[in-house]
Length: 91
Image (tube, rainbow, N blue to C red):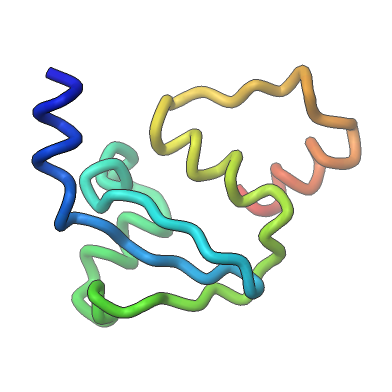
């Protein structure tokens, strides 16, 4: 099942530029959280999904947000209190 998922999502990537740092995630993975900003952005039809999308936010904690799309959980034990507060704002 994992190999099939990887093969099926190869043409399904969204390229994001968050505050100058590049990220990539499958559109299928973004749709795991239906009522989220990124899912709504993808489904809006207002952005060209083949082009890089710029998001004017700090990239510092963005990988954690993408991992939430992937695994539906966040490992908070490695975050400082300040990072946790910043993550709540970003999320």
